Image 1 (cartoon, rainbow, N blue to C red):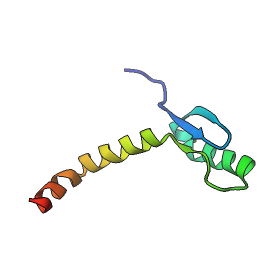
Image 2: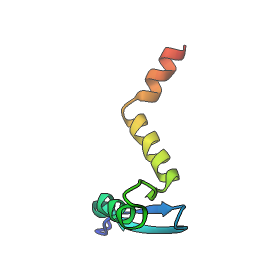
Image 3: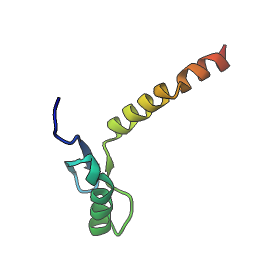
Length: 73
């Protein structure tokens, strides 16, 4: 089993940059970039593909997809 901390991709379309940061540093890295480069506006973000995948995994884990299927039936 790996002891390395997972890293998360951060993208900033305005700066045309992408970087990876350790999960524990994610919120601080986003805040720091947006404060320094974009006057605090939330421009840099977690890679949208990662956000979508995480949302799907959480919804699946919580059984939200199952509930939706029951409601649609």
